[in-house]
Image 1 (cartoon, protein in one colour):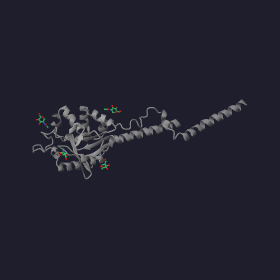
Image 2 (cartoon, protein in one colour):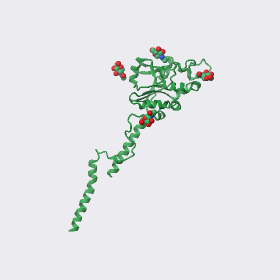
Image 3 (cartoon, helix red, strand yellow):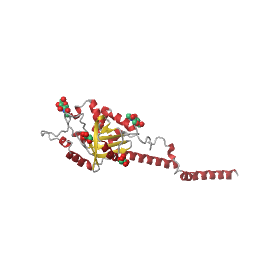
Image 4 (cartoon, protein in one colour):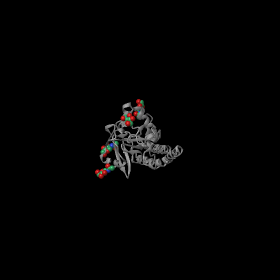
Length: 264
Ligand SMILES: *[C@@H]1O[C@H](CO)[C@@H](O)[C@H](O)[C@H]1NC(C)=O
Ligand SMILES: *[C@@H]1O[C@H](CO)[C@@H](O)[C@H](O)[C@H]1NC(C)=O
Ligand SMILES: *[C@@H]1O[C@H](CO)[C@@H](O)[C@H](O)[C@H]1NC(C)=O
Ligand SMILES: *[C@@H]1O[C@H](CO)[C@@H](O)[C@H](O)[C@H]1NC(C)=O
């Protein structure tokens, strides 16, 4: 008697045990099982936060610009604006080669306030998509982050957007990142406002002694075209963005693995 009861009980227990995985399998797909996986690096922490320093350090090369931003702490100003998700920020980032093309004294002669101004001159305290620049060009001159006398003119030339400062007129070479609230566009030249470089334009065509590459940066239409040729094929689309996608994929994989292990 006892023996057969025990046998029945054991059979029942076994049946439950064996059917449990089946049940779990049936019910688990819709259920977000990985609740019990604590440190999985968040698929969605703060959707709008973009770490500018990190982005600029992996895209580019924009090391020169990033170094100046960090040295002057302007990176904090930019990041604060980027964090302000209502209006956002647009930053024009000259490539390392653009800085290399300038006279060495161009920056060493600036006071630290002037250097800050020059960096702020490379941004608008608003997010602008490329499409919005077309409209913006009717408002020329446009105030930069550096404040009222420091303006830029934007022109749309057959679909290419040119950014005009006093001594350079680079074309937007590529869009590094353009998701509200942060827009970052790469330039092949540094923007040089008249207010900082009125007396000694750092890129004035050299009379002859030193036929440096600086000559090609004169603000002539030809210079604009040269910049365009350089920039045309340039496709340095956000490496950071891709890295982000990879890490999301990785965490999805981890989550999936977690599910499987739970089922097991
Ligand atoms: C921007 O936001 C991030 C994430 O919320 C925060 O860690 C950082 O300190 C903020 N930076 C500034 C300059 O506001
Ligand atoms: C930088 O300063 C030096 C010495 O004061 C001067 O000779 C030179 O012309 C200046 N360069 C620029 C680009 O202002
Ligand atoms: C540009 O302006 C036109 C007319 O004012 C408007 O219809 C369009 O939506 C604007 N485009 C952008 C991207 O702001
Ligand atoms: C920008 O455009 C305004 C108005 O068209 C013009 O007066 C100004 O000289 C331009 N500035 C530059 C840097 O080209």
